[in-house]
Image (cartoon, rainbow, N blue to C red; front, side, top):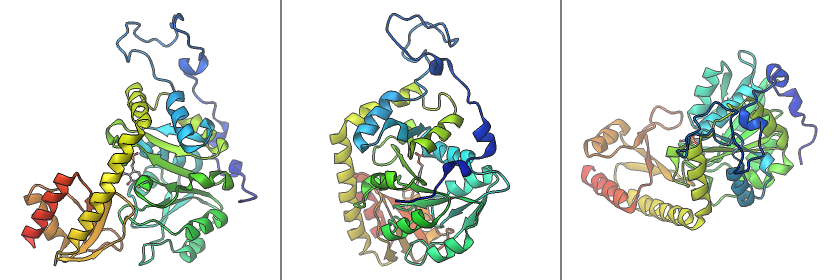
Length: 349
Ligand SMILES: Cc1ncc(COP(=O)(O)O)c(C=O)c1O
């Protein structure tokens, strides 16, 4: 259990002082079917989406809270995790003053969001085993280091970070620790959600874009303490998760069997893909993965990337990323798509 952590010392002064916008739906919440709503300047003619959506997405949060065993005031939803990550920057990082720590190679949006918010990004590369370099992190951190971003399983490497390393960061880092668990449902590792109540500085982000198969609806999820969630709630746009997204998310969240079957198939296909990749002469290394993609080192990444494009397959060339020279990232597709990929890879080798 982490002690002596006070979130109030991390909140930006302007956010602390802010009186949030109060929407019509925030002010009047006691819905009954015979009420007449003339408060939000909506078009009154019913078409399914003529009303503003629930700004607090109560029904979606209720489902998530039951699923994860957390209370609804520990959940904030956003327009993809990208919005959630941006809200975290804007709530806690003072432009031109504060800094964040990231561990390349990792998800590129942390760097982009730092730039957008004029926040210095102190990049501490992963070790050669793609694990956090704790010594370098702690010697680079100072009292202006507000957030460390941990992506586990990590994009683009695919591996999870050791629990011991993450726990050390949670215990010793003085700012917030964001663990981005976008790929957690493909992993055998336990989510850090189960430790949320031990660490008042922990924020876990997840998304419906990956295992839940709903990248198109844009629903990102942030789990943390009620205190941190209430700060983020204060600055979020009032109706940041639209009505159609809320409806689709609820349909999918109750369809647990269908989601589990797809995850099972993706993991099975991932292992099949890895076993096939092992036989290809131009693939030098296949990195361990806990995600729905595989990172491999090849002889000549641009050449192999272009050969695949010429054959109608688009993958990601990661050769320009730190520690990823000549690396390609393959997302696991359907059985048919993976078969086609393997056929073409055999053909071009
Ligand atoms: C690690 C990681 N986090 C977050 C995201 C974005 O998630 P969302 O679609 O919820 O914005 C991605 C997308 O590729 C990702 O790889």
